Image (cartoon, rainbow, N blue to C red; front, side, top):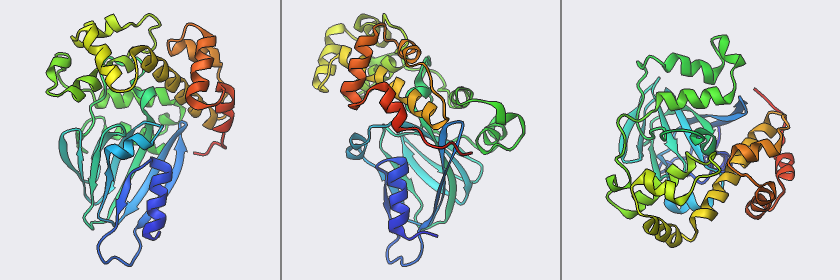
Length: 305
């Protein structure tokens, strides 16, 4: 069992800037944190007896890597406030969290045991028609729960041969949103509209011809309004698209390195929507201060299951 400082440090170093709060007057252990890897994906196995864990907007800005965290409750109860929803997970339930959104995770001293599967956000959104719905509880009784547990734990035989892309597709299928947004006009504030525009871009990165005019048609906003929103957030449409494409390639390289694979970097660049390798290499180096090859080498680690 870990003391609170050790447990909190493990959360920060493996999950990002999620801030833990201990129980008042607690002098005992805070929990256990173990990390393992499957399909090139990190899985945190967490047992804790603390008050809460918070993800703030300031913390979001401090993290370079973005994830969708698949939370799978093993025992105990945990409360979540995320993406406009408030849910309580009981054993067998699961929930999807977006690291680019604030969150409150409430334990309030109740012992809880859960898995947190770290799914690279860029890889989960790649080529999707819709963003998987976050903050919504999927109950233990859901017909796909047993298959999901098999994919994550490796129990069930056939799951050993699958790759991460299948896992991404499976999670997207389980958490697909019901209905849909009528466009940016369906959001009540400017930040919501801008986020919707950003996520629409991320789903169309693989199209090298994707333009601000195409984005305007998809989100029902004017070209001028979109340009103003990107400018107000310190960027431009063109720069944002290039940076997100570089981030998508980086996610592929990071996972390949962890699995001991050496992908063709040019193929990844074209897959991400770059149609000029010189521009890709320049953009990647500006964003990561490394060449793509050096970035891959830095993230190479022994593969464990």
